[in-house]
Image (cartoon, rainbow, N blue to C red; front, side, top):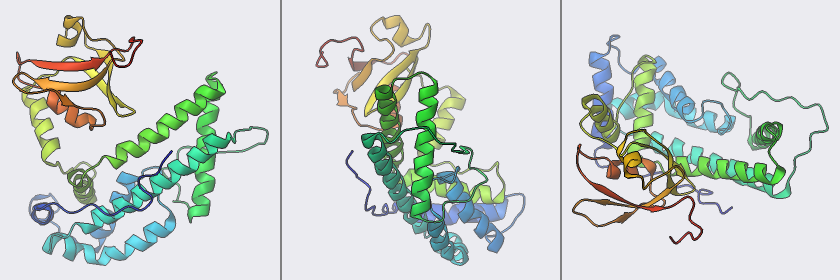
Length: 307
């Protein structure tokens, strides 16, 4: 395992992030039921909710991270509602990504040395929603060790062989790092402003441009897919299952576990989608009813992966 996020530079704010941030704060103040500006209580909820959205089971951040960023709380109303400064979103996210990287590297070493014996009476509570964050990195290491031992034991009780368990857990943690590492500035800002919205009430959310477009598409039923459930698997877009009667099933050329390596719109050239975010691949595949899309696939049953 090679680290990509040992030293994380915060993402750069987009050109319109300032306007988006101030507009969101002012809209909540003016139109939310409470008609309330960003006072000290809302600011505290805002910051706490952002930590919770990133780390709901309190396993990645350490207490010193929380304490360090809590110093921003008094400045948040000025930064958010007046100057449109969303830099805390990217600074906190950078620290979060760093902690995930540290956790994945820690687990990778445990898997490499195969430190999994169960001869003592250990106890572990996986539901940490109401638990505090670990006090420091030493406490985090102890927590991460217990967590991966718990995961290993779950697989062992499911009668998985040791080599398969190690493979499963290694893939799981690489996927964790990849999924968070793929977030761009707009997606991080969406999380941040959702935290602000939920500081007013838990049922309010902020939708970024891409999420709003997807919501509108689903409500209007204006675009269609190929009738397949897709998932990301080690950099590939894999066919999870087919919808009976859908275009993919009717083609009789696609089956579960096939991997999509390129997508071609009717009048375009094939675009390679290996290591592309799943949401981007879905956007490329989706189109108006009756439109054509051509997929280049690596068949699940291919003896030669170049097929």
